[in-house]
Each structure stands twice: as C-alpha cells, then as structure tokens.
Image (cartoon, rainbow, N blue to C red; front, side):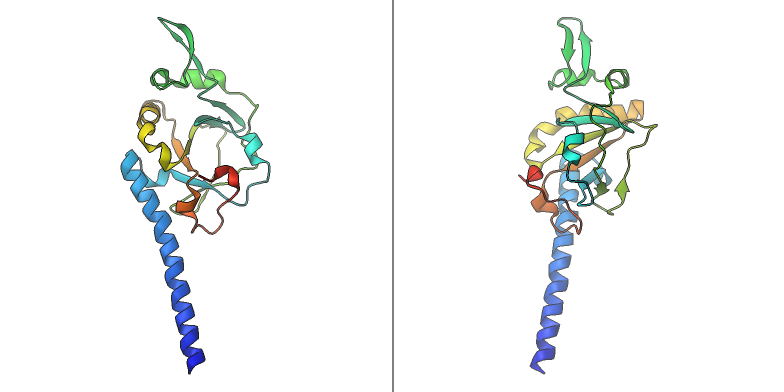
Length: 190
C-alpha cells in the first residue's frame, strides 16, 4: 500500500511541477506582452534543434531584418539626415526614421540565419523565414524592457504601414525553461 501511495505522490508532484513550469513561460509571455503592448504570439525562442553554429549566422544586433537567406541589422542600416548627412539608424533617435526602403537597400547574404530553429513560445510551432517577406527579429531580455519602446514603436509602425512583421526572440531562459526543446547554451543566459 505504501508503494502505491508513494507512486501516486510522485506522479502528482511531477504533474504539478510540469504544469507549474508551463504556467511560468505562459505567464512570462503574458506579462511581457502586456508590458510591451505587443501580442503574446510575437514571442519566440531558439529550439535545441538548432545547429551548434547557428549563432555565427545571426546578426549580432538588438534588431535585425531577415528575408529568406538575406539579412541586415539596425547597426548596418544608414539613412540621410538633413542636419548630419548619412547616419546609422542604430541610435534611439535615428531609428524613428527607419523605412522599408532603408532595410531593402541594406539586405545582404553575410548572415543567413541558417541552422537556427525558432519556435513560438505560446504553441511551439516552428517559424520559418520566407523568401518573399521581410521580418524584424528583436533579441529581447526583460532587463531591456525600460528601453524597448523606443525600438518597438518604429517596428510597430513598419508592421502597420509596410507589412513588415516582427518577432521577439527572448533570451530570458530562466523564465521559459519549462519549454521541452529550449536551446540552453550560455550565449543566451542572463
């Protein structure tokens, strides 16, 4: 009888632990969604199905733009400023000038995003970069939340006016550790 009782206790404990972890990552995206005023379906993570060298194929920037195997980053994009001439759009002031034309002009094949498997946190469905669609990729940690509005505002505008969606690729591994196939390399740890 003690063995059966022990098995039941272990089973229930495991059940509640799994549910608690699932609740944690769903709670995380609900909280971040509300704080950033973005839909919960905008939050993604890197799956452990990614190749070991996928990081080498990503733009090393807070915001990147990907179209198929082409990409660019906010650090590479330049625009013309009436007062200062050519300026990089990576500053919070200049990023407000971002347009689809700026992005298209700077797309290149240096970083193809090859080998990365990105999944939606809410439903764990795999995301793929389409050859016909530019997508903004935002590397995100909740530690950056106080600064994100200045970057998300132009991305929301691009989505609305230019049909360029954005995804938020979270680096908050501790908050989403309940995901069954989460890539847990130290590169993404807080």
